[in-house]
Length: 146
Image (cartoon, rainbow, N blue to C red; front, side, top):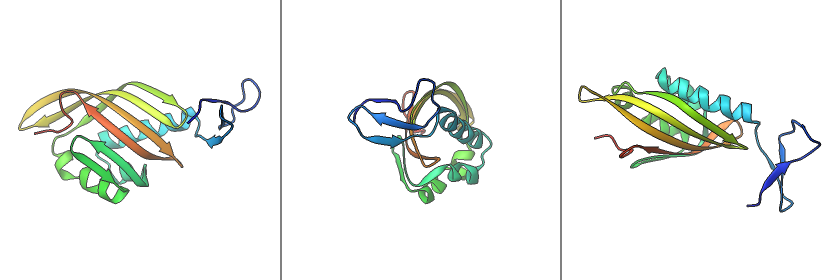
């Protein structure tokens, strides 16, 4: 994969990016990617599983600890009652968007066995067609909650 540069004149708002090796790729604008990620976090914090799933590509790959989800239908199991019982919430501290990629540094608060826990979280996502295509989540200590 080559480097990318804006296609068009200086200040152009085109979303077509030209790879330095001559190839072309269509990438959503930064504002679109940013809005998609922030909407996903808001849906998570609202425990709105339907909205969470609408933001995922049909063939999404989502990895958190031992959980590797392939396909939006499998995501319905992960974003279910067991997760919501922990009363999770995310706060985005930093969000970096570059083309179709979004990297987020977040803090997470959730309740396990009656004890409130806080974690630093990093999420690395790729967006395609207005949906989250791939995400890898890293949670401080372990992404698995026991």
